[in-house]
Image 1 (cartoon, rainbow, N blue to C red):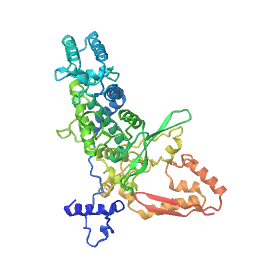
Image 2: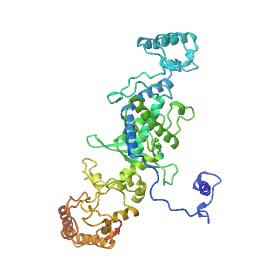
Image 3: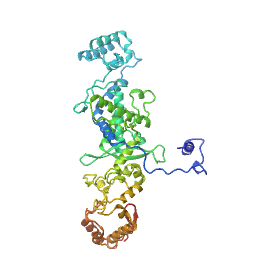
Image 4: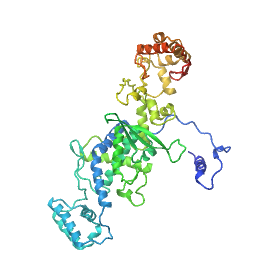
Length: 536
């Protein structure tokens, strides 16, 4: 964007926010002659770089490990930290009995002596703040030299650890062993609570953003209670929905409520991040209280996109350091000799690329991404891959409450008549390439260009089929003349196969002998037929 374009954009903010300022702009600057400049044609393909498969695979696996295996230990340490930090029975200004503080401190030190455990440390000295919190008092208690002497005497016996740790057992397992020795209190240690809590929040972001296709602003707008689970008559969950705010393309700057269908891993990630945030915080991706980001005045502030981008790359670096120190081989590989730089927008883009290459994926993707048309999603998903086309696999129908929606959404074309659906509708360059090649899946010895070379003939054929079937009430003859060996029916009220089609429409002809339909056709890569409402 040029400097003048940026300046014009800034002026238009006065028009957009005219209802919220006193000295309001009375006209839309775009209506002024000469305001705009001719702009070059924007490329159809979205330019956001998608995450390579060999990076996305281990990244997603490690994110799920945090959610499913590490989260319980991190949340337990977080709960202990919050109890000791904000649940102190005595504050700095309260005067306490010397006898009670000495007895409490001696009981805490006796525990370390009994188990021969070193005292929590900080830079080679006993960590008095940590010891005071374990005792149940404020660190001001160590203004008493006698209490300091007790700590020094215990340290001479059991020693001082490198850092302070939380008093909890590690339950998470990785390859049958505890995934970590101890969670420590240091803000900068890889095993510190501040680091692990931020990595857990980032792992939840990865799972939610990648599996839902939500934009960064939509993920950040998720609030406590946003998850809704639908169950069948036996109580078994079969569908999960999340509600958030959508901002792009909406007239309300405060956002508009929207709902996304998600999978069970997203539901687990939302549950974990709800546990990680304090109960008095509504939004799930606010800054955490641990470490440098937890200072006063920012406790309830939302993370910016830049901070989330930093956390994503810190997460990848943490995983690689963990793999190096534990001799693991599932680290994130380098791309072109350097770590791949992760950004929030890449997850939505990467998911779209995979969705569009599934049978019926462009329709499902346009609905999930809330795009205004399928063409918008196709442009977002990007061009077709250069690798060989994958074959279409039959889609099994599911049973239970999701049976109806599954049948309604089944849009896979007959594999015996048309090529396997492996990519979005081809662009001009792709169509020319296909026209030069023989497409055996479409018809032996005939190219894709031959099949598409006579649009008017295709249109007349489609119209003749519907006229013969509907208006002339001769479905058997229509099927015999125009339908191939295999016929897949997507209407849930009609059975699959040619004979079920004939039986259904012969029954309709007998029940409604005077019914006719107005048939319209529209041409794209294939003829699209729209039959108007019946006329009796």
